[in-house]
Image 1 (tube, one colour):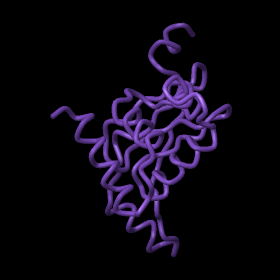
Image 2 (cartoon, one colour):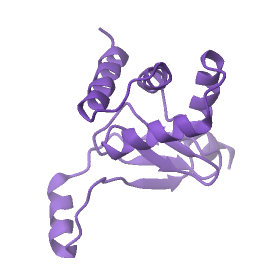
Image 3 (cartoon, helix red, strand yellow):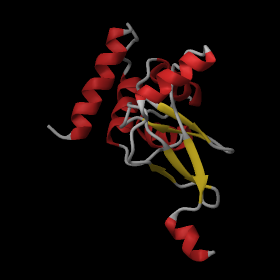
Length: 145
């Protein structure tokens, strides 16, 4: 079984656990998320799924992404023009975002749970979705500068 098969099964199980309907469109969107490399935008996912389901709306894509985000199965990375989604690494990790080309890369460090707990205790804030976005220049854009 490939990693994308495992991730697909995890996403489907999470939707079932929360009693969300598994329409063919939703199942296909989950498959696309599971096999995606990188961080596709909602528009990119919509364009791919529209080929198979021509009557599907943008709203269905956004609603499903919101459901998956609400149950901590995808991270939303909010960029100026469109949100992008990370559905392959549901554990908290930083994202490196290029301010020139909008490329998104995963930071290969995990967020320290002890530091998050200290932050919660010091602030009184309950952290539900720890997410860190770091902005800079990707290797390609850095070379061009």
